[in-house]
Length: 183
Image (tube, rainbow, N blue to C red; front, side):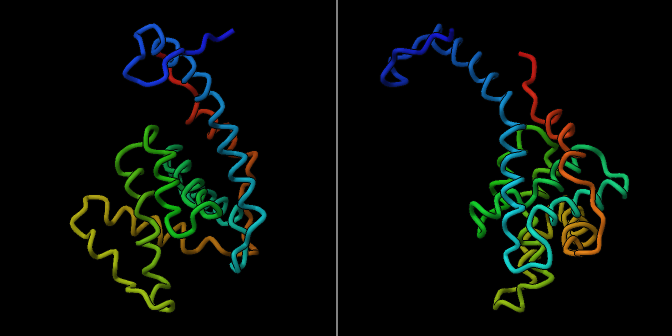
C-alpha cells in the first residue's frame, strides 16, 4: 500500500514524502498510454463538419507519414497532433505539444505546437484570418520542417477513400513512447 503524504502545503513537505511521490509518479506515468489511446478514441465521435472524423484524420496523417518512412517519434506527433481538438479546438496544438514535449525532440515538439498556424496557410483566408500568419516564424530552424508536415501529411488527411492504419496498429508505438522511464 502506498503511503500518502501528510503535508497541507509544499512548505511543510519532507524529503521522505517527495521520495514516495516520485515513486507514485511512475505509477501515474504507466497509465498515460491508456489515457492517450482513450482520448484518441473520443475523436472518432466528432467529424466537426470535415469529410472524415477527427480520429480518422489523425490516423491518415500518421499513416501517410509512416508510408513515407518517418521515424517513430515523428509518427507519434503525427498521430497526436490533433488530440486536443475536442477539448480545446482553438488551442488544440498546445494540448498535443504539452503531451509529447517530454518524449520527443525539440523540432518535433515545435512542429506539433505550431502546426495549427502553419495549417492555416491552406484555409484561413476563407474564415477571415491571415493565411500567412506562419511567416512570423520564418526565422525558426523548424519552419520548413513544419511546412512540410502540413503540406505532405496534415492538410491532405481528409480523404474518405484513403486506407489508413487503425488505432490498434499504433498502440504499441504509443505504449513505448509514454512508458515510465527508469529512474
